[in-house]
Length: 251
Image (cartoon, rainbow, N blue to C red; front, side, top):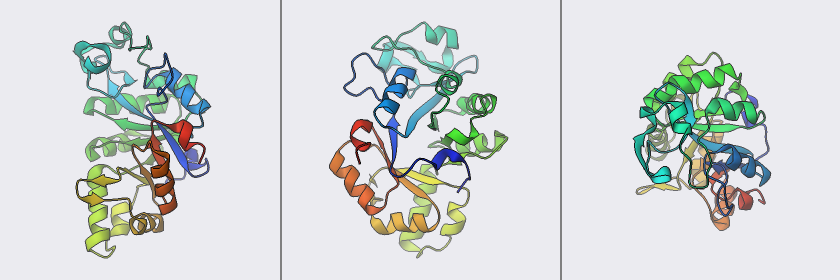
């Protein structure tokens, strides 16, 4: 496991999915307001996403386009940061840059999912300029993006496996008796995964225990029912990614 202070908060880890905007009037997802609200509601970490603007600014925005949230038929990558900032989210929030969040919330621990190839370098630059290596976990569904970001960083950061990593690790656990697990999990700090992926069920105590034996935390997403949270934590999961950090924090 990467020796940063990212995992210092006690287990269970509560990752607020895009901050906390659930049931909070006037707060938009992936905004500084939603992150502050999540921390106030007991989140230990914030799960978020980076895209890159046309002028190379890493912004915290999940979608490739502005259609879902702003009804604007444009890609984030086609707009400068100033142009993106001219648009408002449904509750009048603004899309923040990663740099803004790291500066305005100096204690926040971010779980960053790099959403595009163009976002790799800007994400790294914001981490470097804010000396934020100890308070970020870098992840991506693309193993290539994740590895490029790690290679560009001047210091180690926490990281979780991509879905391709997860599937290789599960196959080794399920069918190879754990053979090559140490090699497959090398350099990883966590697996962040759904309860199941098609017919594959990850939410099993033996699999979670095998990951713990290889010094990996297991975090499940996106878990909003408190009974499911309790069940997963009782299996040995280290945390959950959730829209309901207000519920999860009570565990």
